[in-house]
Length: 477
Image (cartoon, rainbow, N blue to C red):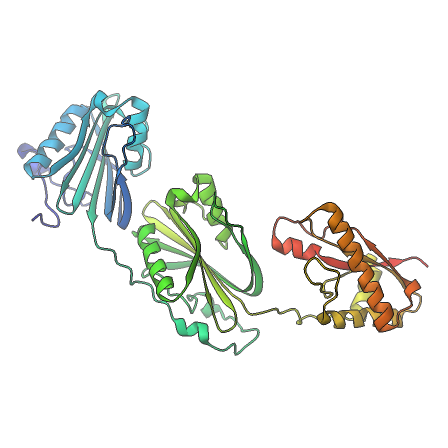
């Protein structure tokens, strides 16, 4: 049975060299080697080549475990000498060779570079892919991969050690009782101290720090669909809480497993997800995370990403949790979005005659959002009564005032349909004011302009909602 760490001497004459504190305890560096970079990540997903670079239809060896990666550079030595020393040390220690290749047998130059790049700490071996040697070995739960490549009179060593471990998925807790709490305050106050705390529903990963946080009552938010999926973006309205966490020396996989376990054990249903390369190319992966980040940017935290949207019913309405977990070097970041449905909160600002008249005097028009219609219909809903009453009071207080009542739509659907719908809705408002509020019909003239005069962009639901409106425009006598 192999001890957890077994120090290997490269050759007996080099034993006195010893290993630097930055080296992995398993393996000392070649004498005179300079450490160019290293990282240690707990519980990472790793793919190691197990065939030549140009071998057809060969899958890498996929492992999950504690990852240690080192890049060394050595001057005035051949790749052959470095290779023979590493090979001899591993053979003496009883490591099983799973695959090895030497020089031309590793494949064409550029193919070899593409094979070796993922092994490097920086993700790039640059010009160090000439006269290459590659070795994949194993003993018990430890896998070790070495890529040795040269450039001019220098040699670079990419060393990857993976110790497979059992999955540990109980590090995040979820308090299901939170979902059943009564809503004891319509507009809760958020103190400065509370802004630094986790959401009551989900604890942070141990050791994570809050980089940024925000809470907004009754906000619109659109959860993006994974790149390339058939799913549509999900527009939601509710109490919005977002966190930007950072954590060191933990893989995105370990974070994902723990969040996934907490949410599924708490009764949440997975709506959609993507993992790692399935989240698109580098640009698409970053753009996906940017849409969730409260800073609008995940910066470099988009390597080996995991993205998921979960849903569960709460006492006040549906609760959605969206997570984007991305890595960079030995760090990872979590973009966490919680949206708690609370029902409509559209009675907090009242339309009144004085405000409408002020808008007409200052801008020549007043934008009305308090008249509600059924979807794709000109039927006015009962909750529109306070706004209609305010318009009637405006006209009663100013007998000489004459108005155009103009209907507007967003840009979804056909142009002609939107023109007809906006006209029908404007006519319905004029009819309601005349028949139900005793406003003289000759003081009002309806018109519909469909999507032609937007108040905002149509690319997201928030903008489209602003465009679906009625406007009062002052007419000359």
